[in-house]
Length: 223
Image 1 (cartoon, helix red, strand yellow):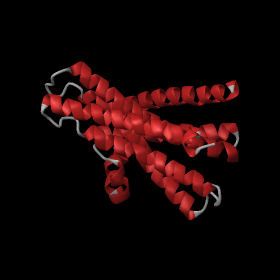
Image 2 (cartoon, one colour; image 1 turned 45 degrees about the vertical axis):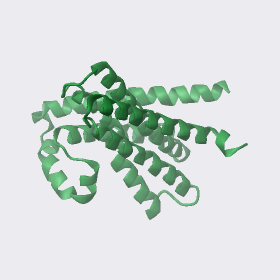
Image 3 (cartoon, one colour; image 1 turned 180 degrees about the horizontal axis):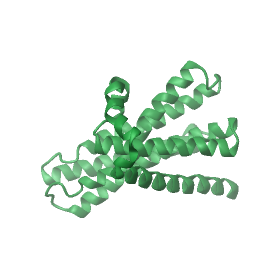
Image 4 (cartoon, helix red, strand yellow; image 1 turned 90 degrees about the horizontal axis):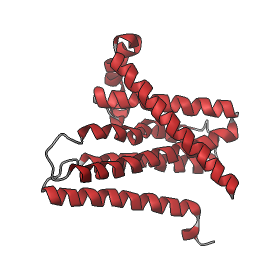
């Protein structure tokens, strides 16, 4: 079978096409409004690609190395650090009416294009990791680690949106980040907004991923 006809290649090409559509919508909107408002969406979508790149690299490493090897652990860490960026994009909807624009409906479509692509990138990387976990752990064990990952991502969305930290800070300034969130970790009940945000995002992400996981397995059985 030609490389171009492989399902994985076609899926990557589809993700690339979806990315180009999003960037194209932004470009037309920028021209139409004579403004680069919302240019951060392009950067956020770039960051959303990183978890999938790291996940693909990790899968390749696990074919010849143990997960406990330093290379696999390093790539796993990078994957987990950047994964929340994919789901963080959902919160970008709050910016939709921040500035006066020509057509808010067009902007809503543009936002949806970026966010949908970003979320699919994140869940695709999570799916690859889930498959690897299922090969090494029980169904319950793999499910636990996926749920824990989504909980971490939900907490990261809160840290990014409300405290304005990002993934790079976790690598460049972990002490400052831990200091900023330490009181919230010690006294979570004093921050109801944090609890609400984390729980809401966890329920959303878990339900969406559960649908994707079960749907993909159903399609496999259909063939």
